[in-house]
Amino acid sequence: MFKDLDPILHSQLRLAVMSLLISVKEAEFTYLKEQTSASAGNLSVQIQKLKEAGYIDVIKQFKDNYPQTICRITPQGVKAFEEYVKNLQTYLK
Image 1 (cartoon, rainbow, N blue to C red):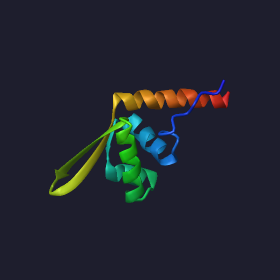
Image 2: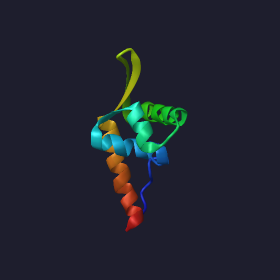
Image 3: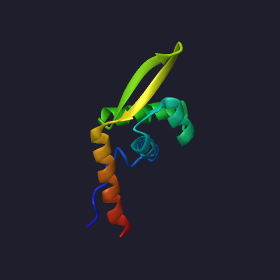
Image 4: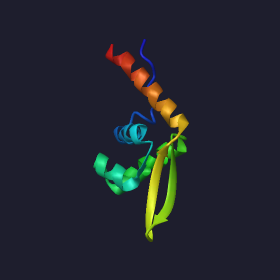
């Protein structure tokens, strides 16, 4: 009856990051930090876990001589997020 929930997405901060990226497709690290109110260190760790799972791509570059980190959701990430939401709904019925 109840479906298993993806442990990668079941973390509050990782779920928040994925929820933001599902709507905007890609976002700068600073935007994600502001929206989630997470510390830079914690957010970095959680982004790395999402990257290792293949749910997001992380692009590091420079913009006006400042480092810029962009996170982009992958097709695998979209699929995992949609599956997570579908499985979560089994708990709400």
